[in-house]
Amino acid sequence: MATTLRSIKSLVPLLDRVLVQRIRADTKTASGIFLPESTVEKLSEAKVLAVGPGGVGKDGKRIEMSVAPGDKVLIPPYGGSPVKVGDEEYTLFRDHELLAKINE
Image 1: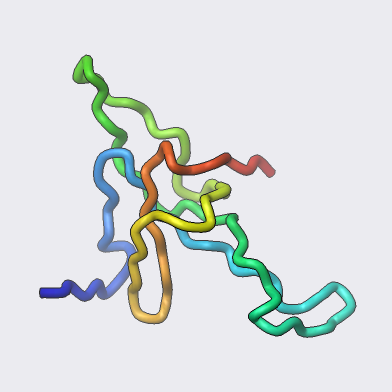
Image 2: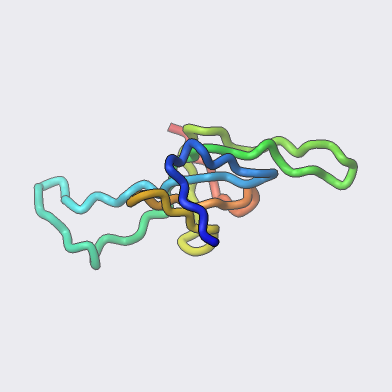
């Protein structure tokens, strides 16, 4: 049986999982030309929406997460677990699957 989420706020990642939403690529150039969706590359930037408490190491101690809600990160172009809430798409990754944190 499928579960339908009413709001993304009701989704809380477990252990070392990170909930992200991809940042959409611009479909318009700086000069105002609109680009067809087929030519726009799928960006690998995402915004972190929620993080789990962290994994547990072999010694039983909690391993701290490397990102926090609000961070921008680079994610692999494939992988993760997709989550759809209404018309919005999100992805769950494990903390170690994230490629980099973007400091602005």
